[in-house]
Length: 297
Ligand SMILES: Cc1cc2nc3c(=O)[nH]c(=O)nc-3n(C[C@H](O)[C@H](O)[C@H](O)COP(=O)(O)OP(=O)(O)OC[C@H]3O[C@@H](n4cnc5c(N)ncnc54)[C@H](O)[C@@H]3O)c2cc1C
Image: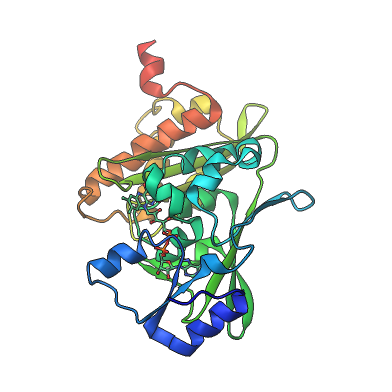
C-alpha cells in the first residue's frame, strides 16, 4: 500500500508499477473484487492520503460544482450547497447503495469502475458534466459521455487518474428528476429527465438512461421529439393510429440504452421499464401526475 502526498506522486507510482498497480479510493468495488480473486494487484495507491482530494467546491463565477476524487457519496448527499444548487444530485446520492457504502465509496471511484448498474454516470449526463484526468504526459478534459466505453471499461489510459468531475448547474428554469428501480442492491434501471418549458411547451429536453445496458446514454432523438410539445401532448394518449409521444420516445430511449439480459431481468422487460419510467420521471420533473393517476382521478 502506497500513501502518496501529491497527485504527481500517485501518478508516478502508477507509472512505475504499471498493470500491477491500482488506485484505491473507498475500496467498495476494488477490495470486493480482490477478495473474490477477480482482480490481483501487487501495489495499491491510496489516493485518500493526498491532501485536498476530498474537496467539494462550488465555483460561483462558472456556476459549476467540482467534485474531488476522494469525495464520498455521503458527502454529496449531506452537503447543504449541493442540496441548494443541485437538488437532483443530493437526492440521487441519498439513494446510492446503503449508508455504509456511501460513507466510504467515492463518486469518482464509481465512474472509474464503470460497473453498468450504477447511478452517478447516468444522472451526471443530464448536466453535460466533464472529468479532468492526470497522467504521466499531463492532464486532459473528457466529456462525461465519452468516459465510459462499456461494462468495467473507461477511456482512461494505464497510469491515468481522474482528478475532478465538473458539473455545470442547470439554468433557473430547468426542472429535473431522476428515479431508480430495482430489487437487488444495485439499480436495474436509472432514468433522468431535465426539461425547460417556455409558454407551456418544451423548449429544452435532456434524457439519460442507465443500468439497463452496457453504459449510460443520453437519448438526443427522444429529446428532440419532446421539443415544442406540451406536457399534455407528452403524457396524453395516442391520437389516431400513431404511437403516443411517450411511447415513441420510450422506444427510442430503450433502443439507445441497448438493454441486456442479466441477473436483473430480460432485455424486453427492461425495454418496458424504460418506457414506464420515462413517463413517471417526466411527470415528476414537470410536477404533473402520471397518466395512470390522471385518468383514475
Ligand atoms: C453493496 C453495494 C451496493 C451498491 N449499490 C450501488 C447503487 O445503488 N448505485 C451505484 O451507483 N453504485 C452502487 N454501488 C457501487 C458504489 O457506488 C461504488 O462501489 C463506489 O462508489 C465506488 O467508489 P470507491 O471509492 O469505493 O472505489 P474503489 O473501489 O476504491 O475503486 C473502484 C475502481 O476505480 C478505480 N479508481 C478509483 N478512483 C479513481 C480515480 N480517481 N481515478 C482513476 N481510477 C480510480 C480503482 O482503481 C478501481 O479500479 C454499490 C456497491 C456495493 C458494495
